[in-house]
Length: 275
Image 1: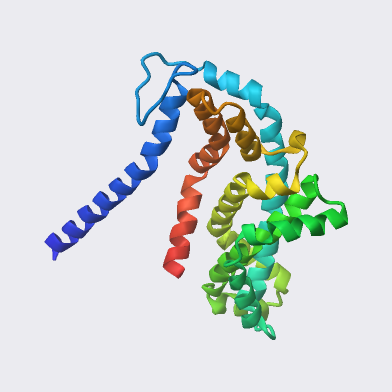
Image 2: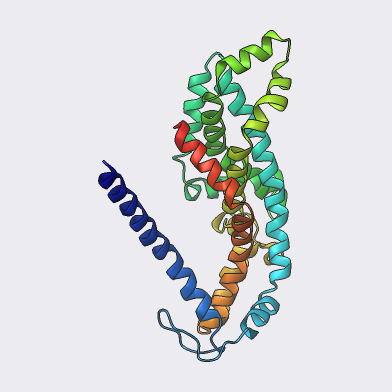
């Protein structure tokens, strides 16, 4: 029995190692390419003979990443808190209350997971243009909130469904209102799930390219991924500078993951055990 368990454990380690290598090598390749002298042809995973950090300064100034990152942060700061609040409220209602049509509403949100943004981006553009919300961050924020709601509600509903009913019933017997139960009892327990959801929503919002490109045609208001797309078109032959720009766009997500990795992994494990 010990031999079998040891074999399964080492097999798991081997699988995780292979998956880590698959993820790390492309990132390492881009990072090493960004340190090559500007204009150097780069093929595959190449160690730089002379490390050049000037590519980051060039990419930052030429592409205007200070403004692009600020625009991305404006949108993400508007999207993430709204998604967390709305998902927590909807997940709490659908997961702990016997609402008329609650299962149908949950199925409706799950069906929203199947709708690709490419299918709806053109109708959204015309709808928002009629409301005067194109070329505005508010329009993008509202669309992204709606776009991320299906998964967010599904995620939080799954969490609240696993909450012991005895805990909620005991609080109600003590005279606690639904709002009190949510704020004082359930939300503190949901912290890992909320942290994981917040990081996922931030990542999705930060990486939005097509949506921003269509809804914001004013290049002075573009976000980091959209600005990177234009930067690539203007510097298609300078691979090291392009790689530096790519690393700059990726850096905020990497920093957030490193800072909150424990909460992120705890939320994933919590969701997996509950599922």
